[in-house]
Amino acid sequence: MSLSPPQRVLLPTLWLMLAAGLSPAADADTPPAPLEIASWWVSPGERASLEVIRRHAQTQGLRWQQRIVAGSGTRRYGDVLKRWVAENRAPMASQVIGYDIHDWARQAQLAFLDDVATAQEWDEVVPLGIQQLSKYQGHWVAAPINAHSTNWLWINARRLRQLKADAPDSWPDLLRLLDAAQKAGITPLAIGTEAWEHTLLFEAVAAGAGGAEFYRRAFLELDSSALDDSVLPEIFQRMRLLRHYAKTLAQTPSWDKATEQVRRGEALLQVQGTWVDGEFSARQLKPDEDYACFRFPDTQGMFIFNADQYMFFKHTPEPARQRFARVLLDPAMQAELNIATGAAPARVDVPQEKFNACGQKAIRDMRRANLQRTLMGSIAMGNANPPAVKNAIYAVVSAHFLGRIDDATAITRLRQAIAGAGSGKHTPVR
Ligand code: GAL
Image (tube, rainbow, N blue to C red; front, side):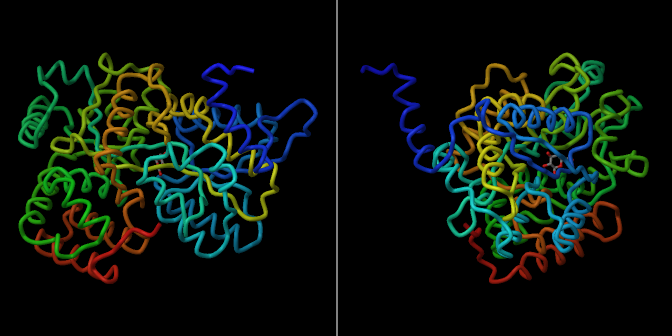
């Protein structure tokens, strides 16, 4: 029997799935497997995204139940999840990001996903920086569903045209643009009040001022010797300048309210993750016409990532675990999901044609950064370093951004936060 090229590619995968005891797809005779998931997605773009996952899961014979706990950032959600686990009522699968995955794995709470990962060849298609978080001691313990990136400017295109300004390519360009907005009576920078949002701004500023190697050494490897006087004063000075443009701080409780201010043209721009693209898409806005997405100046070529993932608690029945894990990494599901979410898929091989202009740029950037080792975890979203370090950085950066401590104090405390993380030289856990 001669095989067509697609069959040749499919056969080994099929064989691996059967060898691993996985059925290739749900059929009419297979009873639906109950699945209960938990997530923090509540905004319009996030709800549209969850709906995509639900639909694909149901098509694969899963009986979907969901628990949704609102909370900008993930701290509140994380606390609720810990309580459920302590009370013995954990969901089967939970959304999770960053180093929290390793915390759960260290407590031996998570089911391994190696069978599905082997069958779907996750090792080959998931960017390496993300794999480091999805795996613990060599085992896949989480299934990544997207590769958001945080180093973006989201700009109201009508206001940009009104200011007759171009894409800001460098730090001085950005300052000129923010000044022009100020003079025109538009709030230059919209940002919420939460520490993770201040830290998200900080990571873009730090990567822009210090470059990729500085970012990697200082925040991923936690190498104190990277934190010398050549870059830190510049970073905090830039943060101080940005605070001056963030007039709406007091009235903007969270990132999605800041997105609304940009959408309505009350504010010119926001520095946030690609979930903003999901919000704009959920409101039928179009890139270029209604909004513009540019890399944060001087971070072009870097992809500061935040990957949403799902982990499975050990009590999850096998059929539900296998079917849902397979759905999550399915290329068609990842395409549809991330068109709604605004992120790049968590696989490098998902075709980009159907994504909007911002999504296509995100995918190209992600693929290139994966090869150049400039795909680096977001500090703000807990993808760069363990929770204790992240929280120490939040405290310094937020106190400084809110004007409670000066630059010199911030520099000293940031050094302490990184040095306190342990040995100094730190290799991300695999
Ligand atoms: C992140 C999550 C994103 C988005 C964002 C804003 O934690 O990974 O998908 O939901 O929060 O809520």
